[in-house]
Amino acid sequence: MNEVENYKRVIEAALLASPVPLSVAALRQLFEADPGADTVKNLLEDLRADWDAAGRSVALARSASGWRFQTRPEFQPYLDRLKNEKPLRYSRAVMETLAIVAYRQPVTRGDIEDIRGVTVSPGVLKTLESRGWIDIVGHRDTPGRPALFATTKRFLDDMGLVALADLPPLPEIERMMDLVDAPQNETHPAAPPGQS
Image (cartoon, rainbow, N blue to C red; front, side):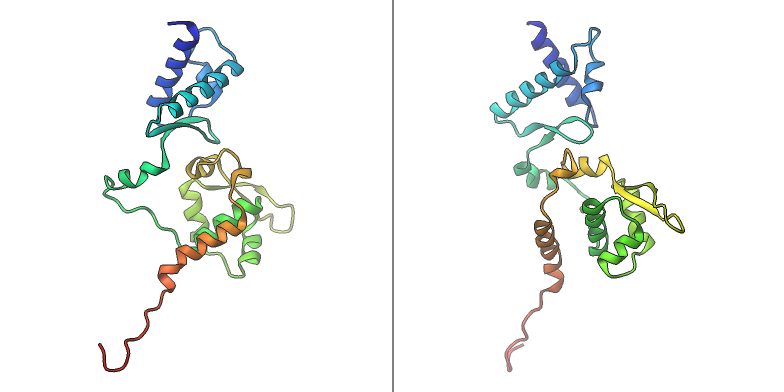
């Protein structure tokens, strides 16, 4: 086996064993003689192509924090059957607040309230902070010095994004929010008179 193939196998093993995405810098540390960032990036692209060509159920994907292997989306419904816990469900207020932070960051709580038109509960921001999706990145230079919120790398990783530029267009978000609300807003027509 040549040196390049060996490097690729070492990178593959590290990515398969790692519970978190690995950056190019971290992957370079695997080797005694540093292969360089360009070589590692090329090897990652080769590795991604190998897995894609093989038609595997897992793909090599780039995220904000680095590279990782992840299940292809079409196999997720099968894996969901193995989960005993229900997926976390977030309120519309939490999702709207997250969208505002993601698309308008950095924003203050007051900015969020102005956009949403309602008071933001401290619990909504705490939910997003505890999930690791938003964080305080500074303070606005105005009276009271309100905290500025922005999304985190974990948000990007959890959403499968490399950068904020990869966020879907706002009309798509609005459509998804309407779909989330649909089951709650459905009304069942009353039975015709004489039927029950």
